[in-house]
Picture 1 (cartoon, rainbow, N blue to C red):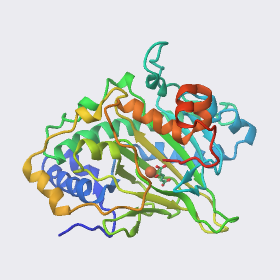
Picture 2: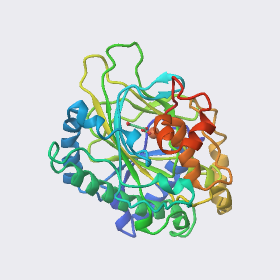
Picture 3: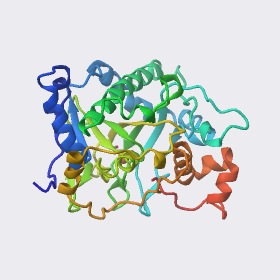
Picture 4: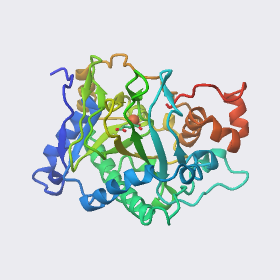
Length: 364
Ligand SMILES: O=C(O)CCC(=O)C(=O)O
Ligand SMILES: [Fe+2]
């Protein structure tokens, strides 16, 4: 079958714990990696009560007084962590319509004066006032650490699904305490004022893995198949949507698909849609161009079987050159958040925005 998917496959993580059923999971994962670039994961090990606790906080997080949100704006943070109000981003020249908080797993900045600037990309998150939202920080951090653990297990399964030893991708990660992963909490209001229904425009994720929690019952997430059709990926309670980004596509010679996706705003008059994407980072020092991997011929043949990826309806993504991944990442963040860059990375800001802050800023 020349694989052109018409729905996103649902994988059952409980198959992994039994040696009799694990091979079936690995086979399904292989198909999802190579042919789809997206999957739902059910029966995952993140406790559903912790997921539900987080979901309960989300409307209250966005309902905080505007001044409480403004106190933790992203522009305060050299780590690009914090609050972004509605209408700050554009994808493909069109305004995205979402409000978001970028949080992250706990991390002490490793950067010291004289060290490369991209080491400063990671550092502590900004949290809302504990008195205004008691328990939120602990709930979000617990959630992020649980998803982090799952994401590392998943990396080993991906290696196996690509015909490699389970530890083949470990070289892209430092020890736990040197890593940091990012989690956003996002609100997509109904776009009543404009005719656009762009919540976020078509884009690829940048890294290896994304674990997306759809935190309300609204549809709106769509993924693009090989012939360019938009396929719905509606919320399925108790699952994560897992997808793969440009970095893993690059180091696997395109074997793993990064798939373009977008979110449509809820219809006029609707309640907001909420989501929580977790972006698993790789080591800031990994140089992807030096790490492109070899695969067994029978696995590479599956890529030929899939055929070439059609040019998808998505913004371009900067190539991974010889720079370390942290630098590639930092440049991406500078381009999408020039106000943060102007304050914390003035040299890079001047390099990318010699004429000052532009009117429209690309989200990806
Ligand atoms: O909100 C969603 O469902 C998807 C968000 C997304 O794709 C992103 O922020 O990269
Ligand atoms: Fe995305």
